[in-house]
Amino acid sequence: MSEGLIIKAISGEYTVILENDQTIVCKPRGIFRFQEKNPKVGDRVEIDIPEKVITKIYTRKNDLYRPVLANVDKVFLVFSVAEPELNLSLLDRMISIIEYQDIEIILVYTKLDLLKGKEQFQIIKKYYEDLGYKSYCNSDKDFLERITEEVEGNICVVAGQSGVGKSTILNVINPLLKIKTSDISLALNRGKHTTRHVELIRIGKGWLADTPGFGTVEFDDIDILTLSQTFREFYKASSKCKFSKCTHIDEPYCEVKRLVSSKKILTSRYQNYLLFAKEVKENIKNKY
Ligand SMILES: Nc1nc2c(ncn2[C@@H]2O[C@H](COP(=O)(O)OP(=O)(O)O)[C@@H](O)[C@H]2O)c(=O)[nH]1
Ligand SMILES: [Mg+2]
Ligand SMILES: [Zn+2]
Image (cartoon, rainbow, N blue to C red; front, side, top):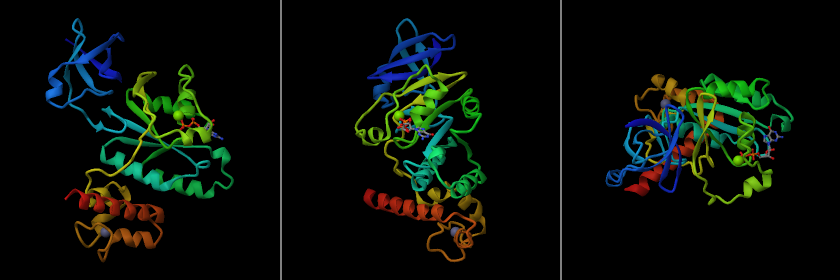
């Protein structure tokens, strides 16, 4: 028996890379079907080399469905600041969903060259950095170096809307990949039904997933209190709310609402929170 990492999955066949860099295409052991447990890219597995069979899937640190990936350490959230303009609602949504999965978030901003006044962007960038999210711009002089450092020893994913420059970044990181970049109109019009397989690409001593991105981003089985806790600054302030389980919506003496009025919390953060809370409530209603 040997241990390896699944780096590619296509129609029930899994490419497993071993410690010595040998790759073997394996099938899962039949029993997984009965356990309704399918191997995923990112899974650490035990394989039977002569049989070319995956015999064991090690416990996952986390488990993503869109994209189908396990054991992700970091997500690079790529956002353009122009064409398409910075989408703070999507940014907050993705942050919340990924926080919930306990994955490190790194923000990557692109297309600063297309932005006229940068003051507003700088305020927003600083706000998220103060929350503890590292951020880089693809125009930073040492961008490539820093991203390569971030990937080292980790399984990472690049996520973001179409047209923000994900493929361009991947090509800079690894010019050998030659992933096709598309002009923006093409990228934005590409049907949402285009499915591509997920694959881990080696970057130095780490792995980067080349995926079509986080397709639909919805709040599946999260409750409102948990949602509120994925907003780091709300969580921090909540100890000063009058009610211990304050959801910062209708409750009086709410510290979060006080910080919103005094502009210490970004208005867009609070508005997006209210929007997501409404979605969560509707999801719960639909379920019962
Ligand atoms: N001006 C400008 N264009 C960019 C930048 N990054 C990417 N692009 C362009 O934006 C378009 C979409 O990029 P692509 O990498 O295909 O985006 P993806 O859909 O996220 O993979 C392409 O025409 C790129 O050349 C940038 O920093 N500045
Ligand atoms: Mg692309
Ligand atoms: Zn509150």
